[in-house]
Length: 601
Image (cartoon, rainbow, N blue to C red; front, top):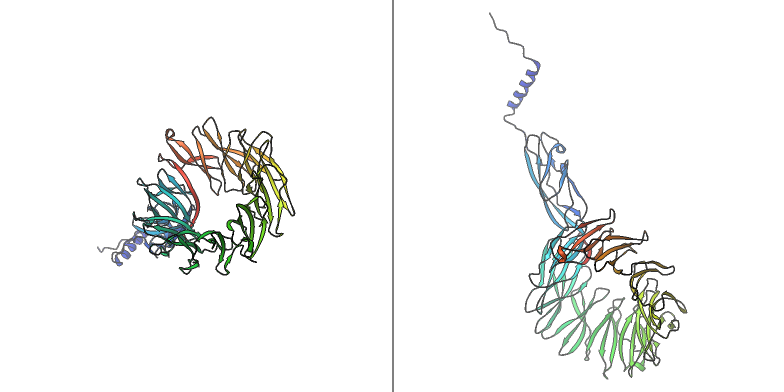
């Protein structure tokens, strides 16, 4: 009997075919995911959610990249499908390690770097240390540990650099912290040399001094490149009293055995050159809006003369065109937005006031009567105010119209008049010590007349200006009954607050400010919301709340007494939902030194 082959079911035939194909491929197995291309270095903005779809860089032989499983190994963040997302703590460089797994359980680990280039930052003291607070993420990091030596914040740079000093007895050392790299550069930590911060020069440079027992030198440090340039150094000489002009030039004195000369340093060329090396002693006095320098020089008969120097104009004696005052001592009073120089001349003990125009070289007498005159303040309009001490006891105000070259009297007064505030349109707040009290007036000038209107003149009460806000509204305090008042020039009083209220700080949102109220020795904080014309109490805990610092998005940082009154921790108030959240909890006092927007791109 012959055997016949049995029929094979269709499904079994397919399986057999697959097995045969697998055998024919000689041991090929499921492949693990791999990178199709390297993941490039990423950049992110601080406080914002960074996203990256890794499916663009991953491939798998059996499974589409979007269908793989993605998870974070280290570096923070999370995945939504194949898209990584994270809000990084603050400025700096971060490495993220991820694992990609296929359905069969095979995986790949990969990493990529993210540079956070922008951030909104606050420099704070945390007890004796210095700390950095990211005001978007509310993450903090200590960058300056005191270790028993006092630290002092000096300045911040928009690229995320922070300058601070450390004091050890009479010695000072200088440091620059780079928030992007979380690294600190010591500009000087020699205990035999005093290193001190002097000034910011442009957006990327800082001027500092080094002083030993034999000399004082000036140096310029570029925070961007890390390069230090020697500005001035000479054996046995002292370089100092530096001023930075509006055009970025650095003016300084170089002295030897009591003889001072004046020099200028150009950061773009890295070179110094003399401004004046006269045989008589000279001193830098002030810089002007046009970038020029005003300096003084001891005259041939012992008087003090004033000089003007600008690189593209040369050297001129201020008041040198008036022979009558050539041998009289002169003192710089102030300057206008157009760089006109107001100065006083001492004539036998009597002070007369003049103004000198660098464009024409012409000196004009402002006031040369029998009374003493002195510069008060420059106005945004280009004019300036000055004082006249009449009879030796009564201080009056005058306005000098620089276009008309004429003085304009204020309304008659027999009391002391003091300018205490200036508005953006040139109006000024005047405080008058009248017989019935110290009162406030608003003065305005429409050529040829100065006029005044009352702000706060209640008989028997004294008032003081506290703040001219960015929108030109005024906050003043009643010194007799207590409390502050908000005043709108032109319309009058807007609001009078609690008798125990006192001004704390102006907020970044125009017109808003914070004041505190004393509740029996315990202080609460309230916001004046200009847009709604209302008050918003936002820090009213049973503990003391005093410090307030506004952020550009409307949030407010403040301190609250915690831990039984032994520490002032930082808190933040959110205007959207009126909630309060604690920011620090380390048991030490916190004070905000400054806030700034950092951009390291």
